[in-house]
Figure 1 (tube, rainbow, N blue to C red):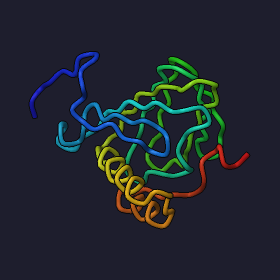
Figure 2: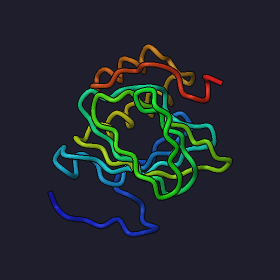
Figure 3: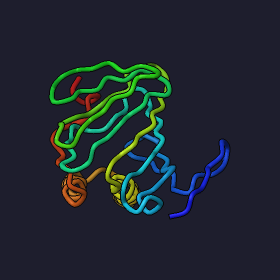
Figure 4: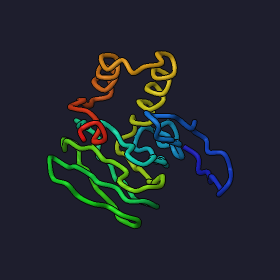
Length: 157
């Protein structure tokens, strides 16, 4: 592994991805860290956010750069605004939603790495299939040691 800097305004080393409307940019990939962790930046539109899921082996840290988010962690609702940091250990069922009127920004740190590769494959799957094939998406979750458990918060009213 070699050190590097991605300066403000530079193109990051990893791709920018469209994950159900969330714009995810891989800033430091698992390949950069020997599989130890990955670090990403996300922009989530109003009402956007992932479906209910659990990482069986990965822990995540979200840092809210801007916006207002609602996290649901093992059924507990937690609000997180600008400057908040949310730790989600492996095994915790979770989802979040941008509850603000503007796009919200997050930093995401994941240990160990692998979620970056999941997002790359999911982006390709979504682009190839047009509409979301939930069976294929669930299989992709399983491949990366995750369990897809339910829909995004926005679809639940």
